[in-house]
Length: 154
Image 1 (cartoon, rainbow, N blue to C red):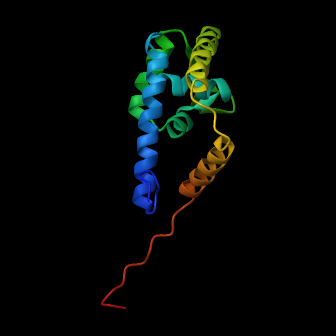
Image 2: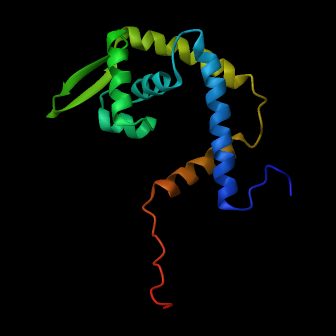
Image 3: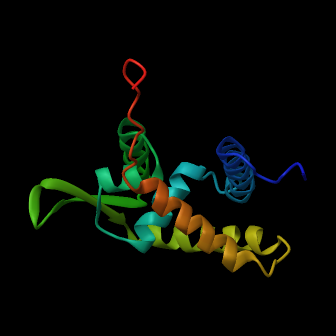
């Protein structure tokens, strides 16, 4: 069996983890000369696609712990890239969005990120890979039914 073939769920998890680390390394390389972290990029990218996101949604979508996200958004606000506003539909909620300067920075960084990804050789299976990853994410986000442990051998 080839070394990259996954025959066990642990193998799949290891492959996904390795792919994520390698992708983050490429992304870091693309962003580092602009002084933007991968985490900041994820927030800017999310807010470019979906403005007016609440902090909980941003934390969930970027996989950042809430305290880390708060510090990061504070820095992005200080840098003039992101603004926070009270949600007009729910005054208890704060939403974030890109400022005009944040949109400019995002677009400039997006070009750099696209250049890094387009330098990779294209593969005819790329659409299949994206579809499979989307399916895996949907399955992993669904509530899992945990096996019931046997009690007294029953």
